[in-house]
Image 1 (cartoon, one colour):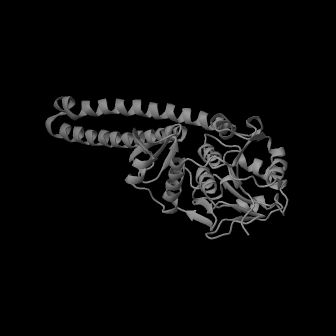
Image 2 (cartoon, helix red, strand yellow):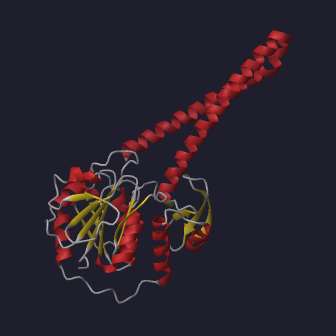
Image 3 (cartoon, rainbow, N blue to C red):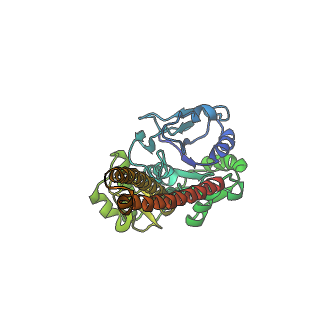
Length: 342
């Protein structure tokens, strides 16, 4: 039997509490398949299914390749794997990270939209930055419904607010009301497919983006078809980025890494800091070498003559090191403030 409806949920910072609340209100016989992506650190143990089992009447299961898409099933993403779905079941991909995450929310939403169209309901919960917005837009393009947690109700409002600002959202509600809303939506008659067919160009782009993760890599030909070459480099691999056509500030590199503008700015900041640490290491090594050269010259030609050679260069380099350390210290303080806000 084909699945009645597919509910895809995305959460990040603060999203676990919202997930507990929403899933606690869903009945075991829900006429829908539910899939959840919660941002997870790549090398951490994934206890999400175990945690949610204390709250959900639908037994949560960590995704396995080939799992069926069936009513009354709750599947959560696996650590360090993108979760993709279609009529044939679940696919797990170790393909390029999207929005600096694997699993990311947009790939799940995009694959569900492409496979299940108007039967798809996308839900964006608490989280920082804006993963989920592009995926929710894909669901709307394919005739599905967009549901968002009330930003004022979210522990971190960024993701819900971004969805509201950029997508024609169908429903906005606090976490305590989302379960009842979803139960009502899936128990309504499945709507007929929208009269307006999906734009062929939009479908082609969605298919290409899903294919990148199924194949676990992109290529230059695909990147050229998806967008225009931009004057930015990928912070994950250093390659050129293409700006996606018909979308608001979203980018892909030819290996497949994808970023919204906010995630790109965040990634470039991290790349900048890493470059500064490399520069500091090289500069300190140069200071040590100049000191050794100065000491060697002093032993052979006298301190007075050596003073105008390597010793002065070492002092100058030490000043550069001090300034660079100050820059790194101020950058770290700024990062700490941002993290506290997130």
